[in-house]
Amino acid sequence: MNKLYVGNLSPLVTVEDLKQLFGEKKLPGAEQVLLKSGYAFVDFPDQNWAIKAIETLSGKVELHGKVLEVDYSVPKKLRSRKIQIRNIPPHLQWEVLDGLLAQYGTVDNVEQVNTDTETAVVNATYTTKEEAKVAIEKLRGQHFEGYSFRVSYILDMDAAPPLQAPRMRRGCRSSRDQDGPQPGPSGGFGGPRHKQHDFPLRMLVPTQFVGAIIGKEGLTIKNVTKQTQSKVDIHRKENVGAAEKPITIHATPEGCSSACLYHSIPTIPLLHPHYTLTTTILAHNSLVGRLIGKEGRNLKKIEEETGTKITISSLQDLTICNPERTITVKGSMEACCKAEGAVMRKLRDAYENDIAAVNQQTNLISGLNLNALGIFSTGLSVLPPATGPRGAPPGPFLGLSGLYGVPPASAIQCQHSQSPEQEVVYLVIPTQAVGALIGKKGQHIKQLARFAGASIKIAPAENPGVTERMVIITGPPAAQFKAQGRIFGKLKEENFFTSKDEVKLETHIKVPSNAAGRVIGKGGKTVNELQNLTSAEVIVPRDQTPDENDEVFVKISGHFFASQSAQRKIREIIQQVKHQQRGAPSMHHSK
Image (cartoon, helix red, strand yellow):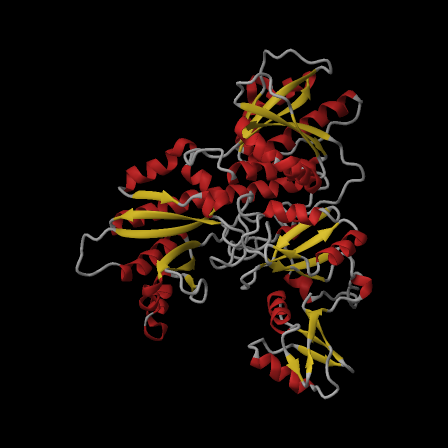
C-alpha cells in the first residue's frame, strides 16, 4: 500500500537527491529507496504519508530538469479490484459519490481515508477487475464541481499471494504464538473480553485561549494530563483562521470531565465570578438522536437536572469532512460540568450499544462483511467512524481503530454464501420523504438500488391523505442491510423528523402464520427476550388474518442496528420452523 513509484527521473538523479527532496518537502525519511534507470521505488511509513507524497510531488516538482511522476507502485498482477480516488470535493454528498462510482460497476466497499488534505480521499473496491479498470479510465482526470479527480490502483491484499508461514522446529513456538490469545473459560481461544471502549471527549475551545491551555513550554497541559490521567490532543493546525480549535481528550469518564474543567478555566474572565460558561462538545451525528431522545425528553431532563441551556447544531451544517454536530452547554461552571458528564454518559451508552450490535451482526447475517458495506456518510452514518481532527475527513465506516479505540471491522467478517436467500422487507417512511428518496427523475432510488444490489419499490398510496408510505425492499441480507442503512440515513439527513425526535426505522416482515407463535413464545417470553436483546420494539398482532400465502406481518421499530438485529433473530426463528417441518434437526437459537 505504501510503496510509491517515482518516474521520469533524470539519469543524474541519485538516492541522496531523492532523500534531500523528501526532506525539503517535509516528507518523512523514506524507509527504503530503490533507484533504477529512469525511475525509483520508495517505501513510506503509512498510507497518509504516501498520499501526501503523491499530492506534493507528482507533476509539481522538477529534479535535474525533469518533472517527477509519482504514484502507487502496484504490480500488474495485483492491479485488481481496489482503487483510490483523490481530490474529491469536501462538500460532496456521499449519495452523489455512490452514484458516480456505481456508473462503472458494482461497488463492494467504499472507505474514506483519514488525511490532512483539504479534499477527501476514498478507497473503493469493485466486484470485478474489469469494473475497476473501467472506473480508473473514466474517473481519472474527470472534472467534478471544479475539482479534477486523481485515481490510482492500490494494493488489493485479497489478490496478493498468501504469505507462507515460517517453518518451526518441532517443539518450538513462534513469538506470535506465545503472545497470542490464551484459552478462555470454556477452553476456546478468542473468548470475549469485557472491556470498555475508549470513547474520547471532543470539544471546541476559543482559538485565543489555546496558548493559555498549553502554557509556557507546555507546562500547563502537562500538569493537566498528569493530574487527570488523560491524553490530550490539541489540533492547533486544523482550520487555520477559525475562531475555535478542537481538543480530543482520552481518559476515563471522570478523567475526561476533570480535563474538560481544566481546559475551560482559561476562558473565564477572573473579574466576573458569575460568568456564564459556554462548553462546546463535539459528537458524531449518528449518536445525537439518542442524546436528544424521543420528543427531546433526554435533553430536557439533563437541562432541568443541571440548570443549563443546551443547544445542538443543525443537520444542515454537516459536510463530508465534518460528520460531527456541536452540543453547546451554557451555565455556571458547576452546572456545565454536571451537564458535560450527563451528555457524555448518553453518548457513551449509545456508542457502546452500537458496538454490541455490530458484534451481533457477525453471527446473524450469513455472508455479511460489515467492512465492505460502505454505509459511512456524513448524514448517512449508522455508526461513528474514526474521525480525525474537526475539518479532516473521517476514517472508513467501521474502521474503528482510530479515535474510538475498538477492533477494526476487518476482524468482523463472514464467508460469502453461494446463493443468499432473497428477503422482502416493508419499510415505513413519512409520505413527505418519498420525493427525496426517489430523487429527480428517479435517479436517487436507482443509485440506491445499484449500490445495495436490491430491488427497491415504493408502494402506491392507499388514499390521498396518508401520512406514511411503504418501501418494498427485495434482496439478500447484505443488500437489505445496505438499502435500509442508506434510507435510514436519508431520513436523518433530510430532517424529516423534528429535532426533538429520535430517528427510528419501522419495518414489517412477513412470517409464516405457524411461526408467529414461536416469535411470541409462551406467555410472550420469546418476544420479550427478543426486545431486551436487540433494544428494538417487536409487535406480533394477534388478530391478523393470514394472507393467501398463509403469512402474517411482524412489526419492528428501533434504531438501525437494533432493527437489523431483530430482523435477523426473527429470520432465525423462521428457519428453525422450516427445518423442523422438513424433519431436519432443530437449529440452535443463539441469544
